[in-house]
Amino acid sequence: VYNAANTPTIDRARRGYAVSQADLDASEQDLIVRLASAYFDVLAARDALSTTQANKKAIAEQLASAKRNFEVGTATITDTREAQAKYDLAVAQELAADNDLRVKRVTLDQFVGRVGVEPKGLAVPVALPALPSDNIDTWVATGDEQHPAVRRARLGLEVAQLDTQIARAGERPTLDLSGQVGGQNLHNSLNGIAATSSGVGTSKTASVGLTLTYPIYTGGLTQNRIKETLVLEEKARNDLDFARRSVAEATRRAFFGVQSLKAQVSAYEAAESSTKLALEATQLGYKVGVRVNLDVLNAQTQLFSTQRDLAKARYDVVVNSLKLRQASGQLRPEDLSAVNTLLVK
Image (cartoon, rainbow, N blue to C red; front, side, top):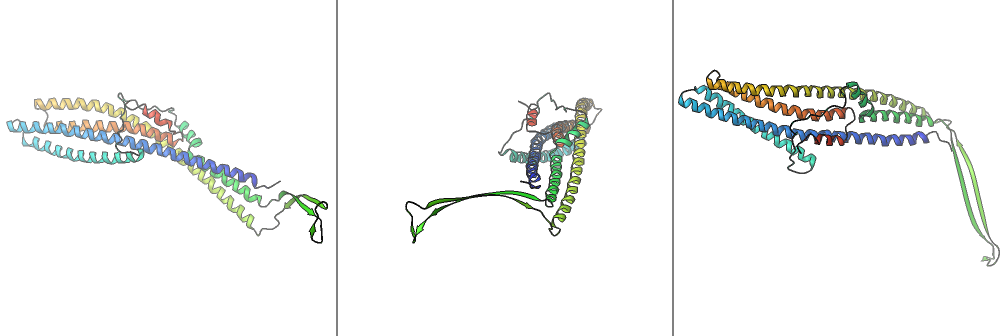
């Protein structure tokens, strides 16, 4: 009829289910980010290998040109040796890039569950994902409300408060309702011989009762349990504060990271155009004799390095946009569909 512990016990079970759901959401979001990171790591490694190979090819052509010019006496042995040194370095870089690509492919294959996955690159012209809001406070507020870690900590505090209610219920009386119904067949007998036509009957009984239980003395067990739950409740409150601060910090860091990466992409795009013009000017200067072979080699290396960094920055924008949504608790599987629209069809 009355037990003060019943309602908070049921509510506690419901909170336990919600905690499990928050843990599931956190695991799902983490998987999405790790899968996207592995995917774009392969693309970045593949682009790095391509630019390294292109750089090696350009250096090889410059090396051959330096050797020819030396043979006809229009260049010094220094040009040849500088080109050879650059070429040897490019070979080493190609080997390292190839190994890095192999490792990144293995990681992606493990996520996908099959071997030989070939990810598609970003469609040209490259369109980077736009943020739904440029207001950092909006992102922080959303994270404080939706992030699985904050939800879990908030539920943990509610569970601790319910545990305190359950412990306090140990000091209160309980009222139980009980009932019983019974029946018995009766047979008359004479000298041990059962009656056959008379003397047969049935006895029925029924009872209803209320039992009031009041804890007079528990040896301090209930009081100590209440003290324990109050301490755990305070710990849960501190855990919630820590979770909220951590999520807010991670959200701000992710937001500024995306903004910085977008600015880097713009800067690398401008640098790519500039280094192309610089390479053309250096090659022309080398032909007319005002620039040396090393200048051409350095200009080529700078161009390929800029192209590699530009591709990596673009991939980082996509991945960090997902990380920003994760930091604010908004990441969903549907966000991967939005990323797919940015890829080559």
